Image (tube, rainbow, N blue to C red):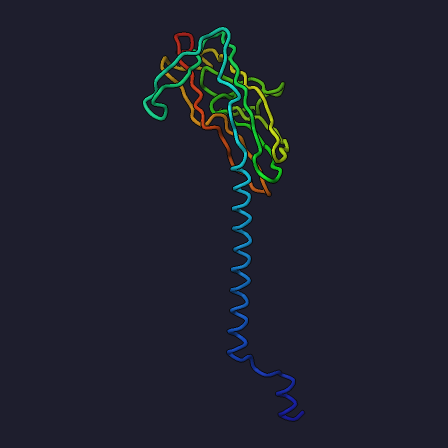
Amino acid sequence: MTAVEAEERAGSPTSPEQVSRGFVLFLLGAVLAAGIFWSWVAEAAKLRDDVEVTWSRPVTCTGTEVVWRRLDVGEPSGVRAMRLRRSMDCNLPVRLTNNGRRSVRIDKLRLPFMGPDGGAAVQVEKLEGRRPLPGRIDGVFPMSRSLEPGASYDFVIDFSFRAPPKGCTAEGVLWMRGFPQVTVTAMGRSGTRSSDRTIAFAGTRESSC
């Protein structure tokens, strides 16, 4: 084999121009991939944000009273609070509305401190006949429900008393802003949506430990 043949078989060395061109193509591909990823993330977030969580009407009760209580922060005009009594039976109708242009999935409902192992003197034992996940401080109810564009889903949250010593709430106000909380999945990405309302409970001698 001659020296010329050996050089032809080995191939000519890569030029600096070829290396530079390959690096530029790699960067362009990376930028394009990043752009597609962040567009997907942004679109999924927008679709989740288009799900509105609202109260269909204020809380109503039998067996107890709903009273006005003033809070130190967040609600300068005060809130309507359910007085915690053994005989209480209160309910809150909630509506989820998909204002977006694609369908989303409602994965679960979360009610802080109202689960089987919650320590407050209020609980939610069932939702549409289903019990919350066991061993949780929060009331967590799986839903796995599709919500089409423009569609709404209505349900009612029923609050009941959790007697001491299992549940204790001192005299004063127990409150939570952004109630309830719903996990929504859009385009494979999940996030939490909540109402802009505050739920509140007024502790009594019956609820104190």
